[in-house]
Length: 258
Image (cartoon, rainbow, N blue to C red):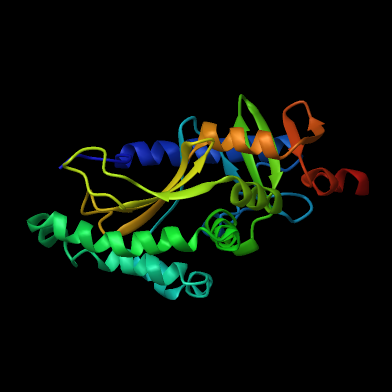
């Protein structure tokens, strides 16, 4: 079976790098090295105004989430998200309980998965549903205030509201197609920008560790292009921290209060 995703060691290195980037940002905005955060709630850094930042770096892809069936069954936000949570559960249930059973007849599971994947694509034709999904996926349903990205050795700060609106208003949502006769169509929901794949919602069934999990990935360079295109530069907080859009009126206000 072809392997996808990170090895255990690779995942550990990504976590360490993520912590280092978050620490560097915290120090740049005046926090101490023991800054507050809440990784479970996607709050990588909590600034001096009490607002939370999701810190993203990397060069190629961001894994926004990787969830099993329990998350979609027990999370109230997913359960009340206009049918999205229920369809993600159906995608998972299209596959048998064990990877051994799946490997006996992979095609049958892929054919079952086509139905909820097509229904998801149809739901996402409504911008409000895309907004709701991105709000939950990237900002934990409004608990996180900013997307802060390390790009070209500087940190770029975007208000969650701006990111959600820019993404929802700009993407075209499609299902994946079968490129060769060995592939099965409608195995992913793809969010496109400028006719290129920007983000993908898919099942992950390539290993026992991550069997029957839903993954949502974004391609960093294309997401940054969207953000730079749609959200104008607002102000320079310092030489290494740039602020965009509506974040300009909110981020860094603690400096004025001193």
